[in-house]
Every structure is written in C-alpha cells, then in structure tokens.
Image (tube, rainbow, N blue to C red; front, side, top):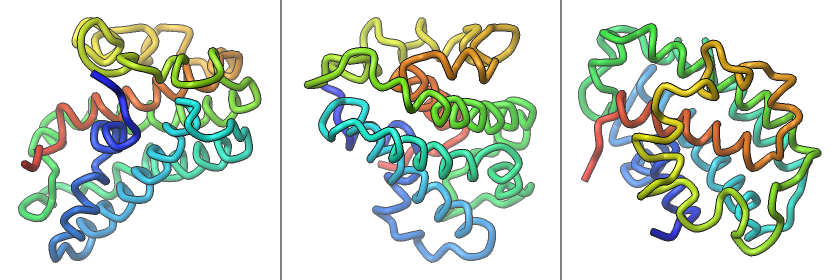
Length: 199
C-alpha cells in the first residue's frame, strides 16, 4: 500500500475527520480539542511531505512543526479531555477515562518524540530523495511495516518505558525521519485505542 500524505493525516491525527465535519457544532472543551487536533494534523501532514522527500528538507520547518506538536502534547493534551466530555460530535472513546494512565502516557510520549524531533531536525533524513527513506512505500502501513501489530505499536522499548529511545538525547542522535516515525506511531497507537472511527 502506498503511503501518502493524506493517509498520514488520517492515520496520524484526529484532524482528518475534524476538518471534514467542521467541528459539527462542537462547543467548549470538545471544540478546543478538535481545533488542537486539527492544528496538529496540518503540521503532521506537512512534515510527512518533508520526510517523504516530496518537499525539500527544511530543518527549521521540522523544528517549528515539532514545537507545535510539543505544545499540544502531555498535560496540554490531557486537560482537553475532562471526564464525561463525550458524545457527538466528540470522537473520544470512553476508554480514555477507563485507561487514563495509558492515554496520559501516550500524551507524554507525544511530547517526548516531538522534543526529540526538534533536536534531530539538523540530522536530516536517513535516505534522502524520492520517498525511498523511512517514510517511503509501505514503511508505515500494512504488511510487515512498523505500524503493524508486530511492529512498533506493540510492546517496544522505542515506545517509552525502559528503552533507550525514551531518552531525548538518544533521539537527538537519530535521523529526523526515524524520530518522526515514532511520533506518527504514537499518534496512531492513541487513535487506534481511543478514537471513534467515522465512516
């Protein structure tokens, strides 16, 4: 399956459906979080084009994008999900509150990888050019990819915990597209468990 920027936006962040539904009459904290997800979705879509080589690599744009994601992660993200803030047009599953520790850990992990991406921005891509890098065909979707059940979405040291990839200084040594993949996988893992899929 060919990985496209549009697929990335849909798989990575809530923003795909948020933009399509125009917030569906949301108000209060639900509207705030939908707007935050839309902002992050636009950033992720732009960054995925850079990581795939569709746009010239721009370390400053990567740093700025990482900073935007970072400002919407951790506590800034979890505070947008007070208990009982479900119901249409919200796409939040009840599991957010029953598995709060996991949801909160993913929000913190998002911040860690955003920080790591900002620090790794100057390293460039692992494989420059034409989608042949880590974000190329099949790198994140389907089959034996990192996004599959046996990949990084499972219990992996790279996804926090005791692994060295939970260390910002280790992330800073990686190619930017490698850290971006971890950031994207964190978004996808959260959406898989905590987001209601809209048809």
